[in-house]
Amino acid sequence: MTSLEGKFDSLEDRITSLEGKFNSLEDRITSLETQVIDLQAQIKDIHLILENEIRINIQRVAEGHLDLSRNLHNAMEPSSEVEMLAIKVRKLESDVNMLKQRLA
View 1: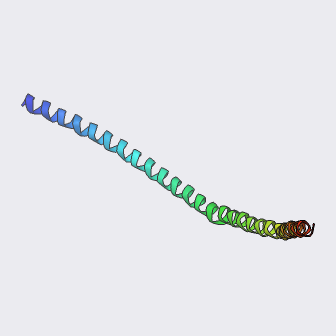
View 2: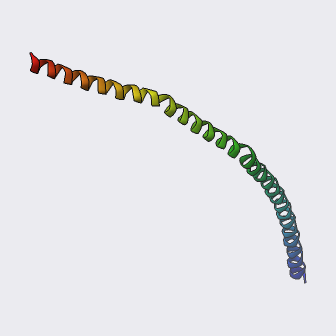
């Protein structure tokens, strides 16, 4: 009978220990659930920032870059015309020099 009481006491101790571990596990799960909810809120905030601020700012920068690119192209256009005229003048000068040499 004493042996049975000892085993019963041991079993009660083990059940008490398991209850303590179960309560600890419940607390950890509750803590994890809270952390997941916080992370979901943070992810939602980040998503909103990406969608409402960063995308718009990138679009503005891209549009500004496109305008700058157009302005640069337009500014370089007269330069290209001047260079073409300079090439034509050099060719004409060369032709005139050849004519002078033939006539001389």
